[in-house]
Length: 92
Image (tube, rainbow, N blue to C red; front, side, top):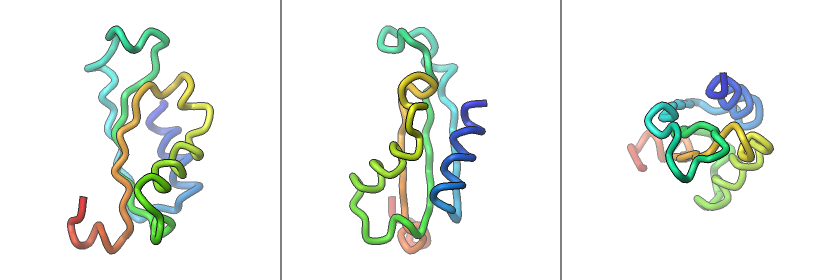
C-alpha cells in the first residue's frame, strides 16, 4: 500500500517520464534504528521538473511531496532523481 501511495504522490506532483519504486522493507523489519516501523524504499524518478535543479533541490522536492509520510510510513528513502537528458545518457 505505501509503495502505491508513494507512486501516486510522485506521479501527481512531478509528472515523471519514468518512476521505479523498490520496497526493501522486509529486509529491514525490526532493526534497531527502526523502532517506530515504516518502510525502506528506493525510488528512481525521471522528471523534466528536475531540469536546472541541484541534487539537493531534487531531493528536497521529493521530500516535500512525501510530506507526513516521512514521519511514520517511510523510515528510509533512497532517491535517484534524474532529468530526461541525464537518463538518456545513462547518468547516475
